[in-house]
Image 1 (cartoon, rainbow, N blue to C red):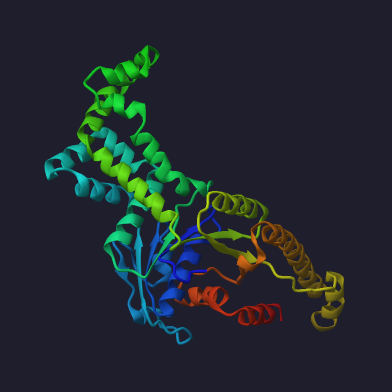
Image 2 (cartoon, helix red, strand yellow):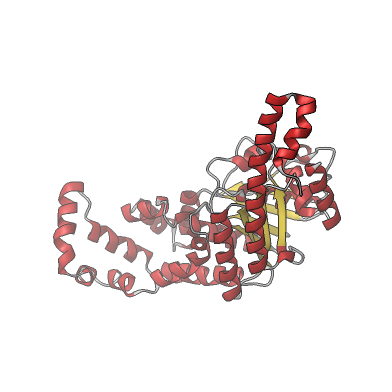
Length: 376
């Protein structure tokens, strides 16, 4: 999936294991000899913990080879990791493109900027693409693996460059950048009483702050717009691969099907799907009651009944997953699916990442053997 790629974007709905999958992909490519950086936006810091680090920073930090040594996987390349800080990334971007340090500081002191750079909605997507572009342009990594922001809508990340461009080139922004008074008229008279009330209650002159903020930006909006266009081009490059990450439950599978179709319709480089937490059929053609009879001779009636009940529940989940995977394969090409089974514990260290690595990087025969061993 990643042969000849320079950027791997792991996308999907929240709670499906994107961070773990991103780390396992980065570890696997580093093991193969590549110089890899994995960028996470995981506030729970699971990636740092999995890699044996106390914390990650807003710049790539190399993971020491000793931390990756497990005796089972030999790493021939380099693994770097970072955790995105949206506020700091915004500040660094302003410092980079402002005409001088004084202008940069004025912008960062502006109330509107402070709200914009710390807002939950949209800030992670925008800063993620800004950091992705910076790393691609300024660092010599063979592969960048991006763990996209947790979101109910995986498309938020994909649409971020377009939304930024539409805003920067829109009439409302141009109105606010004209001389004082034009921006106020652009809002319409109906909004003025509300804005006046907000000013009396909060002490914030929203119109004034907006006008000052956008006038401070000035020609810098052209830099923002150009960066957004370049990132959009990067996401469409044949050296970029979108890897969808999902679980086998119905709602994440539905979103993966929809998102995969959207990638194809838009001509974006869709590489494949990693399906985590798959329940594999442990019973085959047998029914749970047959297991109960077999176990009763060894465990006794009471314990055998409880074990058989557990098998029955797992069997129901396995059939559900099989049905959902069938739908996913029909829609997105069965040859592009990599299945990671439901493991007996959470992945929280390098050993756990190595377990995931077996299912992502092993040959088809090796993956089938692992599944057979799991079932056995």
